[in-house]
Image (cartoon, rainbow, N blue to C red):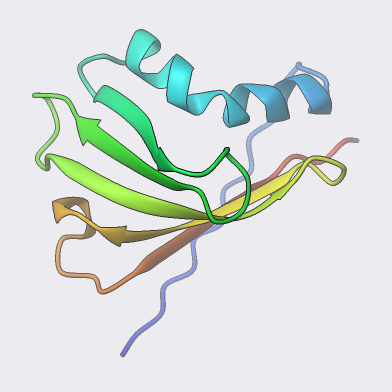
Length: 106
């Protein structure tokens, strides 16, 4: 078994609370802004907090069709969010994929 960790830093002019809200509104924003990438994002179970299961259907311009992920943590006080992709051809043979993001203020 192997583990890969990727870290990415992006500077934004948006205040941290607003930028975190943009990330949390991904389900609504992504299909509107990038319809060729995201056909739909829907909640299968839950209210958006920890334990929520979401389904993503990818657009025709993407080499895979779908994924399902479980929200692990939503911490609005510390602007952090993590989820685990557990199903779909987006995994491309990877058993499980976890991702998280945190918005920092400077």
